[in-house]
Each structure stands twice: as structure tokens, then as C-alpha cells.
Length: 91
Image 1 (tube, rainbow, N blue to C red):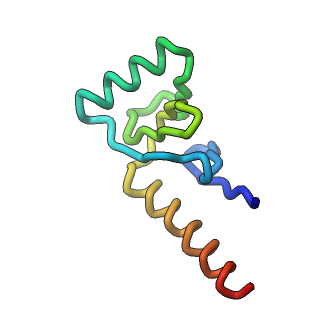
Image 2: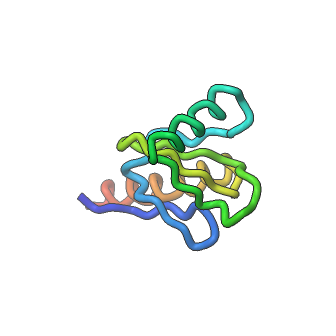
């Protein structure tokens, strides 16, 4: 199984196969999710001191904060997915 990396900003990468959700941090449940992850030592802050614009949830229950918009990360995720699908069609 080939692992693709997903750029989440400022040179930080996440393995795209492990991503469960990419969400915006504006709602109260997402703020609670972030706080719970921090208490459980499952929070990864990849914002480099900037404002959190997206939250990435992984299958290992880690929560990753990014300063890149959720829509931008989603587009990058889907672009990698489309390339993977095309590769499978060729083979």
C-alpha cells in the first residue's frame, strides 16, 4: 500500500490514508474536540503560532491543527485521491 503525504501548511505533512475528517474549528463541538485532545495528549499544533483555520482528525484519534483553510486542504486531499484513481485505471 502506497502512502501519500498531504501538505497541511508550513512544510508539515500528514499521511492522507490516515485522515478521517477535515473540519473548520468554528463550532463549539470542534472546540471541545480540540480541548479533549489536548487533555489526552493527542493534539498536534501545526499552526506555527498562527490562527487555526482547520482541524484534521486521524484514524488514530489524533487531532491536528492547521493554519490552512479546510477547503484548501480538502482540495489538496482530493487532488491526491484523483491522481491515485487515475494511476489505478492505467494499471
